[in-house]
Image 1 (cartoon, rainbow, N blue to C red):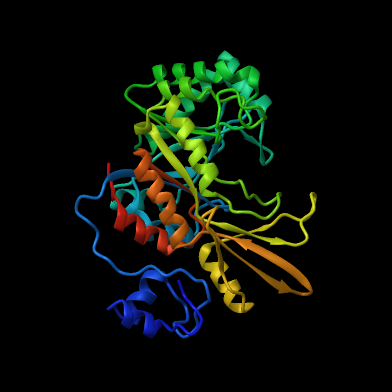
Image 2: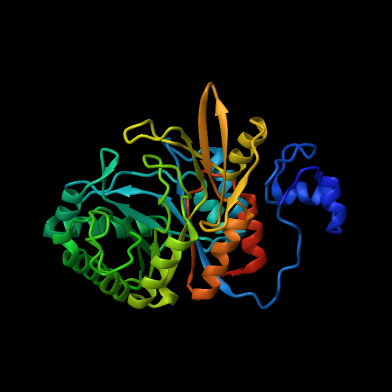
Length: 375
């Protein structure tokens, strides 16, 4: 951690490395300017007996085709990926899928032995829809069209892996979703099936986001699950860590009681948020920022980065145009805490949301602490 009076040269000398290596690993834009409280990753030799895990990256873009920037960002980290999940095919009311152009992503995946995945969502007009999910699960004609079109897309793109990210499922459709997954799997021949799950801490946890997920039943059907262990701090809520270690641990420890840990991928955010204070419900949403952007904001506003030992997450405050801001994000310390939890709980691996955020320390530490399984 950078302290008052530190320089990159002095840090490099103390740890028997050089400035160029620290700049490269941490992608430091200006080696002459560091931020108090900034966490730096130091070079090390990965242990040959580090555990093998699977990793996934959701890839999202907002144009007709992934931009070169999106492709470059994915390719940069593809050596550390098992799966790549372009987000996403939206299922419509009649069971057809919205079209997607993956651009050059399949080429990147093939070059780096990354398995591409068909992702299905119940998004409608920009929001997850419980009524759409109900139609998908219960209308026999719609269901068959979903099955056929998903398999057609998979075959066209050379993959045999389908992922469902159906959210805000009504409590009444809890069993219908499990039945849908069972029938979907029976429809295909040798496909891998995976599913995203909301972060529950008990079987009957109340709340619209949780009630439609039967951890145990879904875990028995699919090959693995991705548990969305992030968004405690979210854009429309009060400032706090996006994935505080305590709540993340609580969710995963509960999940292990219902699902084989060898089927669990821990969800991990690659971003933080910048809130304008004072927070009031209904305020403008917080702005999403990458860890690299957060450090640049702190540097530009001469703000010292603090570290919350309970949440295991960095944060800082700064002023702009007469208004105070609070920023929570991820750094080398916070991601290392998640990696240690992943090891401790002996989970299958980790899944990142999403590709649009630069966090070089994550990928370096991932390589240092784990071996990544390739397909």
